[in-house]
Length: 213
Picture: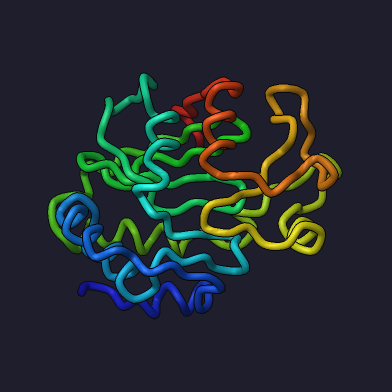
């Protein structure tokens, strides 16, 4: 193993929730995703950190959402075969492409898709593993805590009012922002993640942010 699992737990703490990974996942995804991600699954499971703020995804359960959000989009580096690596309590996803590495970040409630071509960092296992580790270490709690329409962060308020999300649920703006909803705690519910991600993909215009920086 190139990197230690403790590098992630030192950053994010021990999981507040964890689901064991089925053995067949390791066989199916070996060679498709970096070895370091498999090590995280092996030692931490499909883990939720910081009371559900950040999750290591079960790629099987999140594949329908990935397919909904990547189907037919026009990207500067073309199409790929993506799987979900992490997601937030609000459904933000980071996606691993077999050809382009950790190349897509999706903010579904806004419809934003951020492409970053990682194909130049796919030559060996170290570089592939480093993409996963760097993504987890470069982000902080503010990354996954959107600011509401009242200019205050939402996560802690929703955690207090609604409780934490689980591996199959998320915080959803109801109605969705595209249908006139607002980013206020009173307009957020804990919703079924699979259903809500599908609703978002059908109601929210996708915008590829080709020049995000």
